[in-house]
Structure formats: C-alpha cells, structure tokens
Length: 315
Image (cartoon, rainbow, N blue to C red; front, side, top):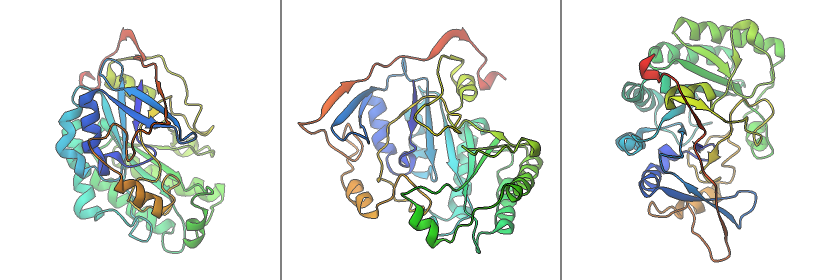
C-alpha cells in the first residue's frame, strides 16, 4: 500500500515526531472525515508499506528525523512558491530558510525524490504573470540540479476557499493565456534541467512540453520501491487527477501554514482547537479514540509484484 502523508495537513512541518513514533510502533488510527465515528487501524510495517509520499511546504522540523523512515521507500512533494505572508502567512522566509531546506533535503535523499511544486498559481494585480515568471525563473535557477521535476497548477475555487479567493481578487485566465504563460514556464524549467507537468488540470499543454502529472506517481514509486505495482487509479480524486490509490493518514483543519488557497484547512478556529489536541504519543493525529468509535482493521498488503526492477540508485 501507499501512504499519503498528507494532502490534508503538513505532517513534516507539524507532526513528524508523531509519525516517527507511529512507524516505530507499526500502526496508527485515522478517522474517516466523512463519517466521524468510523476509524481505521492502519498497519505501517515495512512489509506492507510500499512507499510514503510526504507533502510539505517546510520540511525543516522533519530533517533531524529522516532516519526514522530509513526502512521505507519515500519521496517528497515540496511546495515552494513566491508568495508573501498575504497568501502564505505561516511559513518561514523562502530564501533564507526554505530554499536551503530544499537543497539540504535533495542532497540527503537525491533530486529524484524531491518534487518541486510551484502551485497553485494565483493571478491578481500583485501576483501577475510577470511576477510569477520572474520568481519561477529565480527559483528554477537556484534549484537546478536539486530536483528533476516541477509540478504546476492554477488555483481551483472550492466552496471552502471561495471567500479567500474573492478577497485576493483572483482572476481566471483564458486557455490562450494559460498556453502562452505555461509555455514560458516550460522553457525555464527545461533550461534548468527539469521536466514540468501539471496537477489535475483539464487544459492540454502538451504542445508546450507540459504533460499531465501523477503526484502519487506509479512509475516513480516503482523505481524507488524496486518493483512493479499492482495498483489502480485513485477514484476518490478528481477525474483529471492521475494519482494511484493511497491511504491518507492526515486530518483536516490541523495545519497552521495559513495558505489562503487551501481547501483542507478552512477554519482557523478548528485549526487552533485541533492543534491544541496534538499529542505526539497519541495513536491518532490531533485526536483521541472515543468509546463510541467503530474501529475497523484495514486489510493491508503490499502492492508490489514479484518481478523486480532497477532502483533509482542503479539507473
């Protein structure tokens, strides 16, 4: 199975101590966000976990704990944009802290295992096309050699972030504008040794060298894990999403990054309450198991087929 850690919250930033304890213990519990009384017990032993996908905007707190995950294949989806505190209010300085953290992480685990995400792209009077292209080029030139892939997307409007997007005066560009804009980004990425792909975008950008991306990527996981995966598309994601199936172990409304575009953490009050519940010794993130909970032991098995492939280190 594949563990997603996590689309719902930033585990490397806020909860790496908890997760390191859980992999040591070999299990955790996760509450179903659609049914509050339904809780699953997830086996985390290396025999069944084929890969862990970490999603983060700030891996600095996790860097001292990376060795806790040495028994597991894993890679990082690292979001690094050019926004200031008006959009990403809870992050440390990009150039002083996060860019060096990206480089350090890449040096430790390899550039193939650190995917740079420049997403989502918000377009307004301040963060216009020229701003993004200038920032993207500066970041790409700095990160060149420390990643092999960049993922972009344009901000999606959900019920949970529509108010913030209105306040930011986000504009929806035409397909023609997107094609031209993305083509310029593609050229910058190519100049710096990166392929570029989109995340869950309907528009076809293949004419400018940008393919549709799979963030939880079968081919990358097969290369890291050293075997072929018997896994299907994740039907719980949007139609445009190319990710394969995974188990998310996070909790909504438990991230203090303060990103205006976020759909997973939409209530500052709930974020405060949930983060106050955090106990690194707990078996469930920002929560406790209650007497009325219905606990189901999920059937876990490796998705790797017996036929072996070369690992990334052998390519």
